[in-house]
Length: 202
Image 1: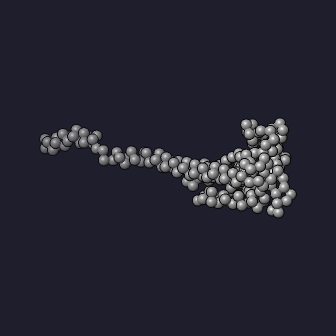
Image 2: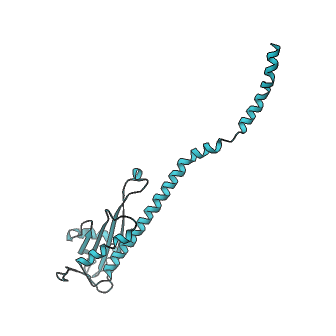
Image 3: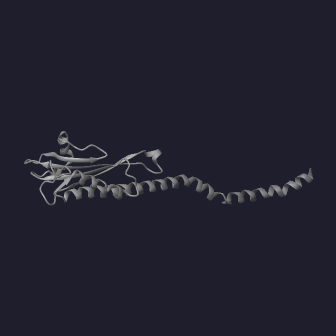
């Protein structure tokens, strides 16, 4: 018994020292901390990528609506083929993004003597053009500040279904859109004619 107590005594004396060493051990803390913040870092990375891409697409849509509206506004008249050619700039304007699902619409809105808007003509790609049945909608589409009596406003609209590259399971497809307004530069009313420059409407 005396021998056993004697052999255990040094071991008992080591326990406080071992406990003290264990409390100071930090070799695994970095790994634990990294495993805790890794999901947050991944979410921040995904969010940053998606926001950057969405802003990039939105900027291109803004440039596209500005371009198609400006090209019409600087004309005296446009034909069906002219408008089609204008819509065709979308491929370059949205590069490197695909144009699948892209919708574009150009509408000439006339204001009568009291500033009430009505559809003069409209052309569209990927969607339907406005007609006279949409005249009531023009009160909402065209801001009151632009509804000046006996004038015309060119309205350029674009719509694009944006699907996130990484977070599509979370957010799904969102429709981005842009709308721009222009006043004809060379004439009071821009005409839309057939390809023979006949049967014009303004």
